[in-house]
Image 1 (cartoon, helix red, strand yellow):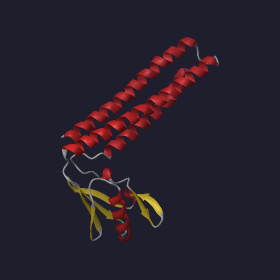
Image 2: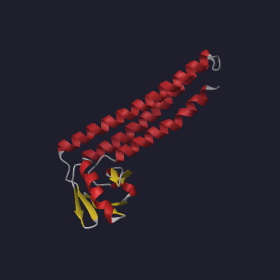
Image 3: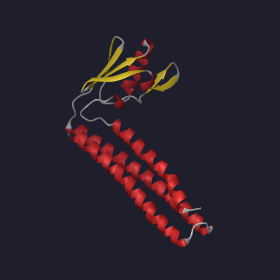
Length: 185
């Protein structure tokens, strides 16, 4: 077995880490309201738990307002309860068949809290990337002991693995920095 096979196996996993991190960033509020802030809120509908995005249309008609238009009128009350419990920094208001959420303007204190949350999510993504590196490195060392990978290839694998990890950590940092600038505006 070539060490390159081991490395190529973790690349899709690292891509998933970056994609998940992007999804988490979308949930962090900036100065503008986006449907991604609430689309994954879990709603208990008739004993079933479903994400909000499957129960209605979510739009942002104004920069600081979100509107949820449920597919069915019977969803209004459970959606309103779920949004109230979601702790998004604003309370939902039922307006006939739609639910409106007016987000307050961001205070400096709230911005600092968001930056802290952002940093935590960034570190979590970095930790996951390092975990995949350790797993791949363990596989390389095991294959070396078994005689399937030559000793000099082991060190090439370590260098190549580190390059890939640095590349993915760089992607995480770029995304984090971009979001940090949006939050601080």
